[in-house]
Image (cartoon, rainbow, N blue to C red; front, side):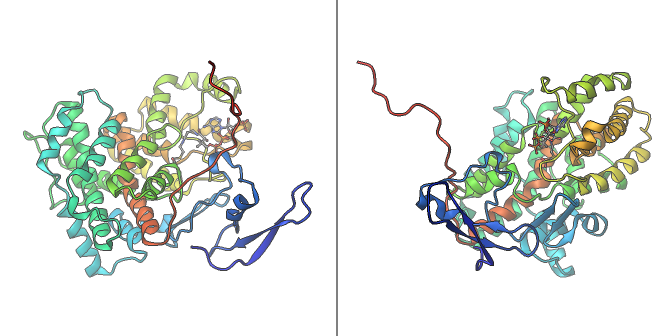
Length: 428
Ligand code: CMC
């Protein structure tokens, strides 16, 4: 919980003589927060739809400065992590607060590798889904179902149980993600291989078949690892807040993460990477881009340029910068720079970055704009994009859940501004 107040704010209400004094707390960096907790006892609620001005918790995991395009995990800038670290090391950092030494790193990687298989009985769950089920629908279901298998580690008050659960979730997520793809393809599930790296193993489970091995190119494996790394955590976004909210009831971690996956699915959040490619499909050709830019600017048209804009980043998305570079590396490696969909994406990016509407509203390409393009080039089907986001985001969700459960916390319970009927009698 927050420390001592550094300052106080005074709230004066019309017709009330004494102002209400509210404590102000300072974090290590970033805006101060006004503690409005005692307003309820004075007969008021705060009103902040979309939580645009609301800090819902204390956290030591991730810091974002949206105006300056800064993203820090446990203090380390995302650009440095993308260049010098890798996904599993970042998972360790998010979960434990510090980078691992070489022995801790080897131990962590080994632990994750030895939790990659899922219970054989879980395979039968997939049979219940139609072959054309969206893989996010499957993922919500099967991750929630993990709570039916691991009764040995769902005591949320036991730190060792929480640790095992974190390892299981990080290890099993790529396996479940690849299984949801194989189910749609009508192909047999491919078992994980513990001799491969995390991203390599995921690509193996996606693309190998019992008849044919899949040789993973180091550039593609590195790009996949980077996609996971760039999605690993992002402070109190909609899905992470959902995980915290579900977890605040005492729900088990598998159920809480399943709730986060559901929240991620929407096109305003993790579903945007899929929506980018669907939008490019709809636009059809570079010649139609001006018409769609016009639609995006029209207040009466719900169309938006997917992959542009961010609630917090109003300058640039630092993840998008790294992703843009990876995007070029992948396209070069695959020799697909002439692809018409990619040409459209480039043109859209060029026009939107120069257009007054986008510049004025500070709408820049976000991480999902480039990740969708990379994934498409790798040959990952569009429906899998958000599943990959969910896989990458798992350590962030679990780190936030763990942070909340380890300290004092309250059940999340927002209030409302009620505008419905006042009391009325049931007709006789
Ligand atoms: N295309 C066209 N206009 C836009 C767009 C867009 N992509 N995004 C925002 N605007 C306009 C919006 O119409 C509004 O205009 P006005 O002030 O005239 O009403 C203004 O910009 C502010 O938009 P907002 O919806 O109030 O901003 P927000 O902070 O609530 O929404 C957002 C942020 C990400 C939901 C939104 O920018 C959006 O819908 N973008 C497209 C979807 C997308 O790419 N989402 C992925 C986000 S990054 C991955 C993640 O972290 O989940």
